[in-house]
Image 1: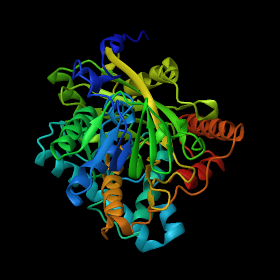
Image 2: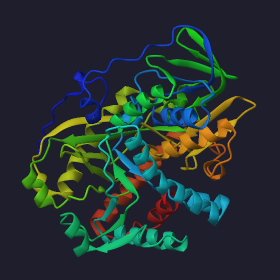
Image 3: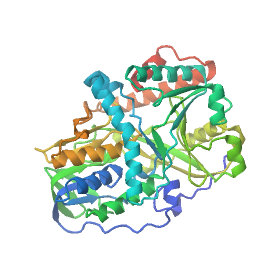
Image 4: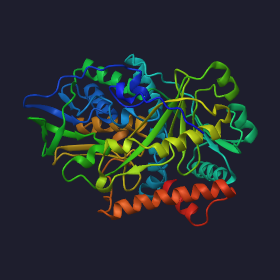
Length: 465
């Protein structure tokens, strides 16, 4: 089937659907002279902006400067699927194994509460990010996927999470909420909202400046050493330097193995008319995802498009982040096929936007936040695609750590390092490629048979939650 795609990327200030809604963006002034600040934040994505925002609230006596190579929100913060989800990247299982039940539950509850916190700040600061709290529907399209959803609910019940957090729906209940003919079951959780991530990031940047923070765009950072940041032709001294660089961390000297930068991809349709939406039955604003290992995740946007992401990843040897990897025709075709598979009525719909961008995976698949006062260095990241909400929790955590304020966030089990580093090349590249290939094989087997792929399916479930 011919996929009709209008390539609009060249006329945007930033890549993808969300940026196209802003038009031209005037960059903030670059850093051009040496200086100093109590806190220097490298990266004006959501992590850096939330950290700056909460620092100005918790410790207004501290001066805060944010440095950004491109535009605030230009990286993963402005290219994602717009899910503000209270789920941890691989669930609470890893925290359970390393820190115990109470710590794992506290981490998951903190993630749940973050959705409401983002909503609160957006309302308080007048940030029109089109936020709609409709929860998440995870769709099982075969019995293997339904089994995973059932086991997930059992695991969460064992940790004390009830039907108010996770609820299994049978086929009939599922289709009453969303007309997906092949659905056999689904899981609903209310702990998610959808939003326009670029509007959130740009609005948050304005809020940071309103509170006294300083943001320099078009300011590439070349090195960070002992509180000294070399940015462009200038040097700025920070009492604490915050690395809020997520996938771009690998471009800093000595940090290539801290996280693995993975490129993910999205497409978006033209706005769909009201009669199409009535037939789809998708009117509650819920985020939607299937349960393939290389899954597709969807949002109904504020202007009635469907934005679809996922269905494969791309990794550059040596952890290189390259704009070339944002271009992924094969993955875009799989995303379109997934959309039509879920909603056969949409066959032939026009796709108006396609884009990609890098996200960061920690070796443990768990995010982390921390502060080393001796090195004058703080960091957060490794969100594995769940950064819209997790970055807010990271900002609160880092702000309290830097300000020396004891808070519930500073007692969470993610405070510390990223754990073990990724393996050196070529092992890192081989491992990521092998994991992706196994996921594809498991998906093909499950699609064909409806059963979990022996051995491999159990391994994937244990590793990814």
